[in-house]
Image 1 (cartoon, rainbow, N blue to C red):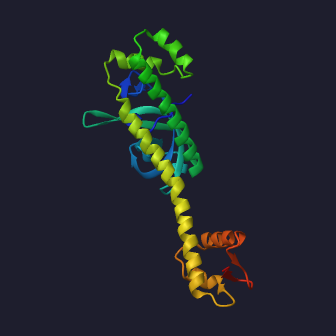
Image 2 (tube, rainbow, N blue to C red; image 1 turned 120 degrees about the vertical axis):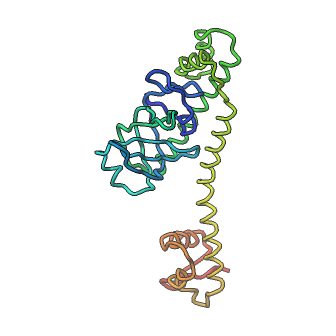
Image 3 (cartoon, rainbow, N blue to C red; image 1 turned 90 degrees about the horizontal axis):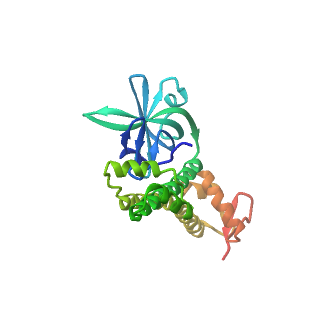
Length: 256
């Protein structure tokens, strides 16, 4: 099963043999990410794609023959399955993903990935916290995790972290998850606030322009700097709520 991690956790990994070891104990070899593309450029045999999530950016190396990627203008939502690797830069290793499969997806797919990746990250944080407080050996810790219905897949990673004396800094990743959840909440609230603002604007303009026969819908649209489909949807909703009615075809009037 491919690992799901946010960009921040991936960009802070340590490399252990063919795996990348995250500071929450995830041993990453194959990874699945969904995010919005922000830029791309050619480098050697690859097209380097930057994919954003609420915590940072993934660096994805896409083979040039993936025309779906190289011929697509940014920004778009991509779902990418790939293997973990790294790029050498100034005597350091930059974690990256070598793409094996790439698909164009929609925002709802990205949102579902955010929710599931948040859930799995929280499980790793809980596991690390239990491990930090547990004085027994790993087999005993495995039974404790089962008791709390937590996955045991990170135990090997925790063992590596212990052997390397790596500090996990779980509080920092808790703050990361807070940022992710805040971004999801804002994306949910902003359309509602936008719709409410458009609703108030339409009602105010109708009140100002209407006569005994109301106001022409086309005239109303000229007064509002918004997509016509959005205006039509809002008017239809106001009609269904009984706040407006149509005295004539193509005209609306506010009900006093």
